Image (cartoon, rainbow, N blue to C red):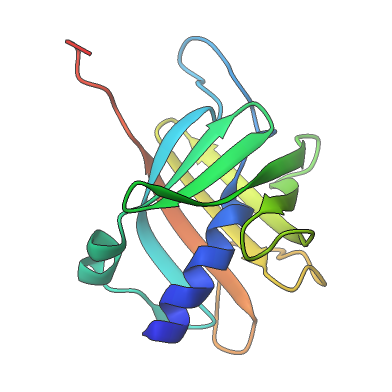
Length: 153
């Protein structure tokens, strides 16, 4: 599990879909906002809900900028560039602060309202073609739910 958790920190940055829709109004809100990790599979290994709850991992997206946090502490920051003409949307994510500084990670993303799923190759060699992280693939699949603010906030 430690390998999965350590890799999760690296992986989370790839999910930054800042360019994937950016800030939008109305029903399609795009990727801007704070996203909570609710599911993760890496190379065939699924993280338990208990482990994800302990990590409290979030992704905050504003335009093409992202910040990955764990238990409220920022652990990675950078930018992403999306190609929305592709299906699924492709992302090139560049870490500017944190353990992946200077790396480019290739990913795909799909946003459906307040749900988002991403799949990426941490080595930045082969962009995933589907939302799958089977054993031996080297891919990571992360599922997110948008954090919703209470009406009185």
